[in-house]
Image 1 (cartoon, chains in turn orange, blue, brown, cyan):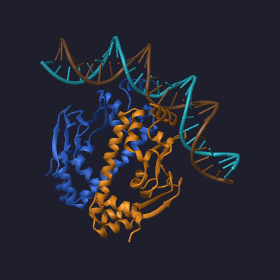
Image 2: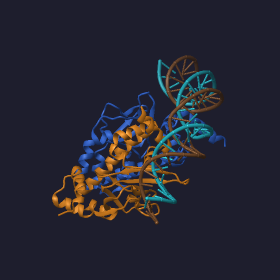
Image 3: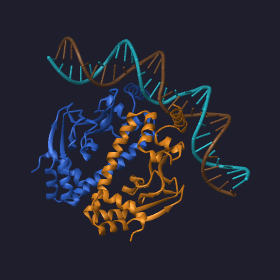
Image 4: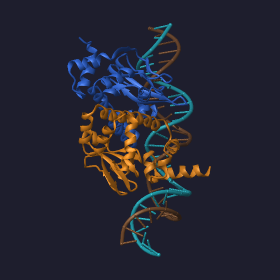
Length: 196
Length: 196
DNA sequence: CAAAAAAGTTGAACCAGATTAACTTTTTAT
DNA sequence: ATAAAAAGTTAATCTGGTTCAACTTTTTTG
């Protein structure tokens, strides 16, 4: 009997590809349950990201730090989302991003080796990863359109609307850098919004 | 014997997944060769994008038009690149983007139905599409980082450096909107760069 | 090839959002 | 509990990039 922490991942997988009980259990058995404390890094520049991480509980933030010390948030992840440095993970190169826990969290980690093994073992497993990558691709296209076509103020409004669950769980400086603005400016937007 | 227009696609595929001659030929036989005149649309809002397009010769531009009439370039594609509205193609929904030929072009088109058939027919075909989507995912991450962390001027410099073959084949207004700036400002950057 | 349309240029005025800095509130660690 | 650090606020000033408008160059079309 599987630990109940695997439940969200199980339904995530079954929503994408039909597996028998055995196939599902074998796939799940390749994941490693890891508990992560707030402020702990699961990916860091200089190291290779050897895992793809499914969030069971908690919240994470991926960001890059540029020369002058500024940081820029690339992605957030809460329950039911995946997070890693995909350039590093897919190509087995050094990471350029940090991924840090914003809360005490529980994740399910799949290593590159196990993922490759699964992809070769069964056409259906490969289908799962293919669908995941395609959805990510479509998601990034929509995000690119949003970033190119909207003003800072509207990007904030959109985020509020699309990710109401995330807004109140991430620090404001992280959200500001995700939206491509300063924390001071986001503070003004919030204030302006509250008073009108 | 296959038309020689299929040669670039054949080597594109074989670079990603090892296929037998028969497997390769069957895969290629699912593509339809299409000649497209300059200024012709291959994807339009209001219609579903039923094809994924591989560029054999020529150049394309994907863009969205927002309320006020401004257009924003989302992607360019020249020889050896793929282009379509992936949201529309993957989900069989109406497109939100235009894809227009910038030159007289030759493309190889794969329909959603044929792609789905290929994915089911042979694990190796599925692997090909999985790898394509993963690379696109990694590419979009890098692009997101570039957009978030660099100034308009540096984004232009980066583009010059990364895509020297594209720069001189696309109209300047299209490049400006891809880089997230006005054509007037790009004109100034170019001028400033030329005179220093 | 001429005329019209599209693309690109230049400069002046303007503004969304950044920067700086001083301050308040919240969180963390002892 | 309390001090120190981190996060968030507010306001004044500044600037990278936009807007507007008039113009020149290139491309398209009859």
